[in-house]
Structure formats: structure tokens, C-alpha cells
Image (tube, rainbow, N blue to C red; front, side, top):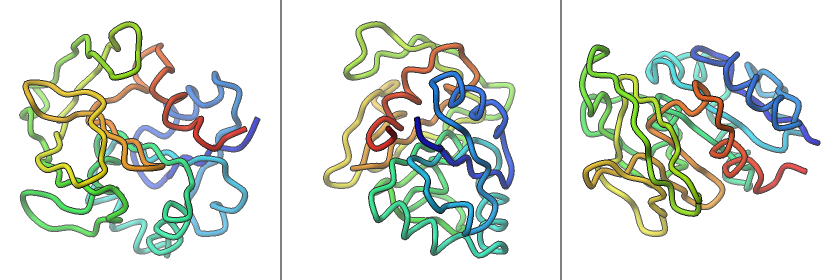
Length: 189
């Protein structure tokens, strides 16, 4: 099977690499533009979206990431990864890749002590997904062509925009690889 890149600037890189490996792909840490060559998919982990954005800018990754994703590379972002992929945020400002046509509200469910777990109905799955939300965002506005795959109380928390899938939660913290498989199988062989 192919190589899946994990943007390894900050966040839960190791947990995503474990899931990728369990699905038979080879994880590869992405820290500089050359690391994007030959990838079959790409993951943006949770962490701090402003830190990830600053480091991506510092290491010259922003335009190469936009080009790779714009070229159809299957891409999956979780939590802060969802924010960095988005085209807008409701509060504050930061560098965004703008490859996911959504506006995201960061920390929408509250602070760290408001974190929670829930059984989430996901479009196309035959059983609920155990979702872990930690200082999670939600999608405030969905652009044309964006498919909502799961929501909580009317707020999208899992979306797909072409080759980009983004989750407000942390599927890498569960033992269920279905979301990674769905998001990354679009092009990985």
C-alpha cells in the first residue's frame, strides 16, 4: 500500500501514524515541501491551529500544501487540522489553507473541561462512531458542494469537500479506523 503523510509540525502525529500503519499504509512525517513527494494521502492532526499555521508558513509548506491538495491528494484533517484546512474562522484571524469551503468556529463546544465523547451517526456507516471531542470546533457555515457527514445539534462536525475530509473530533484516539479509511482511501492504493 502507499505512503500517507502526516503533517508533523505539532499535535498528535504519533496517534495518526499508528492508525495509518494499522490500515496497511506507511506513515511519513511531513515537515518540509520535499516530504510531500510521492504521497498517496495526507493527514493534518489536531493540536493548536495557529501554531501549525505559523510553522507551516515558516517551513515554506503553505503553497506546496495548497498545490498538493488542490491537485486532488486525499486529505484528512482533525480538530485543529479542520481549522487550518478551512476557508474561514468566525473569531480572530490566522493563516488558513482555504482548501475546505467551510467557516469554522474554534472551541465551539467549550474549554478543555467541556470535552466529551459521544456515539456519532456518520453518513454511510452502518454503526455509530465513538467520537472524542477535545476543545472541538464545529462548522458554522458550509460552502456549496460540501457534504455534511455527521452533526451534533445541527452543527456539522464531519464534512467532505471533494478530496478533503475534516472532523471536529479525534478519531485517532479510538480503536475504530473507519473514518481514516474512508478519508484516505480515495487515492491510496
